[in-house]
Amino acid sequence: MAMDMSYLESLQTLMATEETTEGESSGGIWVVAQSTAEGLAGWADKLVAQARLLADQLGAYIQVLLLGSEDEALANVLIAAGADGVHMTLSALPSVAAVAEFVAERSPEILLFADTPLFRQYAAQLAGKLDKPFLSGCTGLDIDMVTSGLMVQRPVMDNRINELVAMREGVRPQIAALFPEPLPEPFSDPYRTGSVEVVSFPAGDVPWLAGEVVDAPLSQPALKTAKVIVAGGRGMAGAGWPLVESLAEAIGGVVAGSRGALDEGWIPEERMIDLVGQRVAPDLYIACGISGQMQHNAAIENARFVVAINHNPNAPIFKVADVGLVGDVGEIIPALIESVGDFSAMVK
Image (cartoon, rainbow, N blue to C red; front, side, top):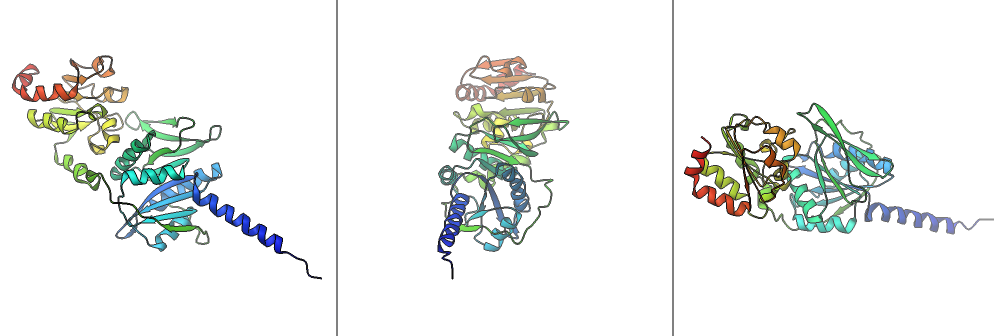
């Protein structure tokens, strides 16, 4: 007598539906990948493979947002590297606001980028929109098995040692950018399966992310040999970064910035004053809107004359400054530009 197995088939269908929905809806680890004219960016599948290691510890799914392509063959490469789903868009650099809304709707636990000049800036802008912390310059990733939070490894002290930083408990998503080199080649499993979806975003709303501002400062003299450096920090947000450039032009200086300026996307990594970035020894160093964290202050210890401009009289930068100007950078910098002759004479 034949047995009625229809209830088993219904149960299997229900379980498969729940698994697909859980894997595609929310939570888990998300990776932002990029395509190029030649195919996937060389780091894309490697970053997915690194995310797979984290996901296995968390028992989580991996979703990838692939920018610049709707080629299903590229999506399959990412699935073979460890992705459970790929969301493709033709937009090579979509609107930060639109992607922030997309991410917020899906509530990932972790959001990963490659630490390239472009995506470091893009991730910083996205983190700002989401009002979440962002860690760049990561050379290693791990999971704190007590809190299920992300832990990152970053080089300090001119790359002589590594620090281990744990993301604040309860923050979601935890956003980090991992250096793509040297990531190991991923194990590719051609039998893995996953979902593929085409999504649409409006064009990017931050023009300089296309490269105009990133590339412009590279034509300036090297920071190592610069005699005059004008550096800005996150405190320039209100007054505007162009004031830093205007002051540098007025006194014949080179533009640079703190890690805060790098995270805001105002400078490329080559212009960051920090123990992880550049140590400098100019005759004149002007710090505009830089609070003066330990790594920044140590990187300018060989500067001959330091001028600091900050609204906070207790900012650490004043401890290493020869001249401290307390006030609004939006008022002080224009005054310095107007009296540039007198100012230059003061430091000779």
